[in-house]
Image (cartoon, rainbow, N blue to C red; front, side, top):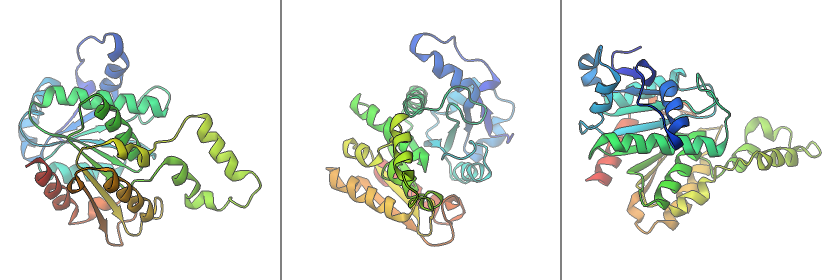
Length: 282
C-alpha cells in the first residue's frame, strides 16, 4: 500500500446503528482514501481518524465510482488515483457490494444507496471542502442515481464528472460490440432486455440529468468502442437542454488513443478537470 493510502478497515469505526448498519459494514471493507501526494510523507503511519480529519484540509475530494469490470484495484484505476492525487485531490475509491472484497448482492438500488451514504459521510467530515462524484462507465449510472436522490433531498452534489457515460444501461447493453453479434438470433435481443427488466436494472443517466443542477463535466474518448462517443454526446445534449444554467454543463472529447479505460494517460485530463472545477467552485 502506498504511504498516502488508507483502508477504512485498518481501524474499526463507531458502532453501527439502524439505517447505517450496512453502510458501516461496507466502509470497513471497501473504502480506500488516497490523500494528495504532497501529504504522503505526513500520512505515513497515521490512523483512520487522521485520514478522516484530513478531508477538511481544503483540498478537493473526489469519490471515484468504477466501471463494471473487476474492482477498485484494477491497474488503470490505481493509476488514475495517482494522477488525481498528484494533482492535489483526495480520492475515495469504493468497491460496490458484490465487487472486490465487498460482500452482499449487487443491485442498482443497493449500489445507489451505498454511494449516497459515502457522499453524506464524506460531506459530514469535509467542512467547506467540495466533494465531487466521479463515475466511469457503469459508475456514471451510480453517480447520477445518487446525485438525483441527493438533489431531491435538497443537498445537490458539489460536482459530477461522468467518464465514458451511456444514456441508460439498456441502450448501452444492446449496443455493446459482443452483444451486437447476436442481434439476428431469434429472441436474443428480447432476452437481454427482459433480463434487465426482471432485475430492475436501468441506470437512467438520460432521465437523471434532467433533475440535476450540480456542475456536470462529461469526458469521453473519441475511439471508445465499449461505450461509443455518441452516447456521451446524446447525454450532453439532454443535460444541456434540461439545465437552467447552461454554463454548468460541459463536455470534453479526448482524441484517439485512450479508448474506454485510459483517459488517465492523457496529459490534458488533469488540467481539464481542475479548470472546470475551479471555474464552477469559484
